Amino acid sequence: MELTQSVLELIRKASTDLSPDVEKAILDAFNKEKEGSPARSVFNTIIENIRMAREQSTPMCQDTGSLIFYIDFPVGETEKFYKEAIHEAAKEATSLQYLRPNAVNSITSKNSGNNIGINAPYIHFRQWNKDEVRIQLMLKGGGSENVGAQYKLPNSGLKAGRDIAGVRKVIIDAVLNAQGLGCAPGIIGVGIGGDRVTSYILSKEQFFRKIGQRNPNKLLADLEIGLYNDLNKLGIGPMGFGGKTTVLDVFVDAQARHPASFFVAISYTCWAFRKKSMTIKNEEVTYD
Image (cartoon, rainbow, N blue to C red; front, side, top):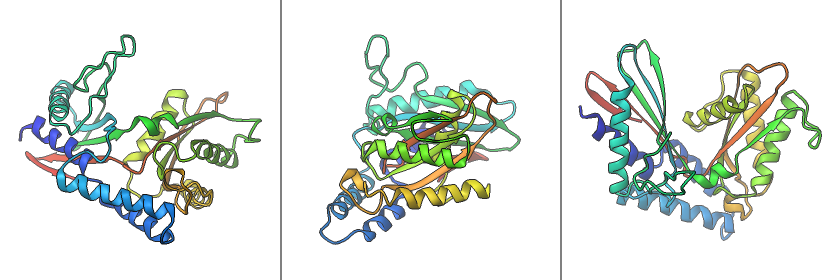
């Protein structure tokens, strides 16, 4: 097993082959819209785009996003081995045009040209007591990243208190403010609690879930379902053209917080919900 080539294939799949759960959600949304409506036309274009990207092995979107990796690996292995393989795979994927060069130096504004820079790709390592390696990849688009938001409760302007009702109010406000930007219909990831950094981290980690996968906490699962129904009643629709589907799903999770702080972070990803994973066990690689 050659790790660099396996990661390269993971990147190619994430960029060009939409996951079945997301594709089904988009097809279901298409079937809900009226014949001849702008929303149905947008979904028809999206579905054709998905088909062509898969058949031609080309990116679904011209913005191939920032690369975010989560690696679970056995105790005792070295992070350096995985980091080097990921960097080489990212360079090759850029050369093969599975990725657009998206790593820009924030001080000089110079693009590295190969998706490599400080914290690019972003790699989060976690050790676990298994004899296998799992590498998860998310390609996070810039447009959808721009409509993410973080709120501090209580919020007097929204009359949102430090409770589930207040959390619900700020999530709805964030989607209303997006108004189709970020290439709706989107998927909403929410992180409740933590500090300003960890609330955003938790919100993005929700994107490794599959469509329809509910939080095991019933209170949060009910919040996810209720928000999914309510947000789709806003009428914003795909690309803001109006319609019955504004979000494809809502994922919420919570963590401990400081008594003085109550943050709610809302991350947004576009319809091109690009996430894939690979598992390595006994030198065999499988993709999901």
